[in-house]
Image (cartoon, one colour):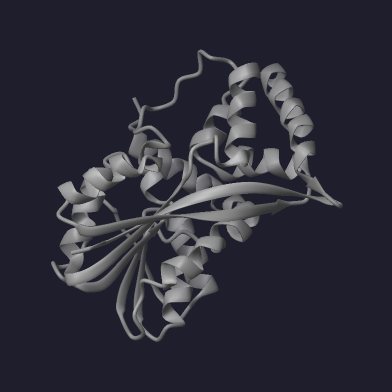
Length: 265
């Protein structure tokens, strides 16, 4: 059976371009908060670097930045977009860098997609110099992130409950700051701080909202892509109807919240 890591890898190879199309405007909104942790001229590693937005912002602060992602498609996209930055294929749970190689470590929404997130946290601690910082973002749970609430509730109401994907950690596991705190401290981090970031996801319409998850995400998209045509049509129609509550003028403005965790080695 396909492992969760294999499932995620295959998913990101499939959805990389659509993720960029639908989620760029949203996921960039965490960058200012992440950059507050980066000193000018620092040596930075951006893990699960995706299309490279965060790595590019870190590079603008004058440092040396390395982006790492396990998806060759993502690495190619990032390298094409930001040719002056080094992007490499790599495993967040087993980084190919020596201990103490970096001043700062960043992971923007990546920990949600890992089979063994504790290993990634241990690796983050290992590759940082003493006193270096690590910053992670995750999504707040659906009761605070309306986009997830809209889609996941309609999948539950109208989808096929028998669909089973390769089992991984709970998607919103690290939305619980106490769970996150405990795992960071287990990995050796100290001085852990949290803050929430209020965000607005701007999309053209409900069709774009449905497509963002259907075409642009591995796990939720995998559930949608596994539905029968009848079930998928029911889910889509419900999402289109539910999305109307977010309409502002001629488009959608969807409230989303992320959790930022910052720690020191």
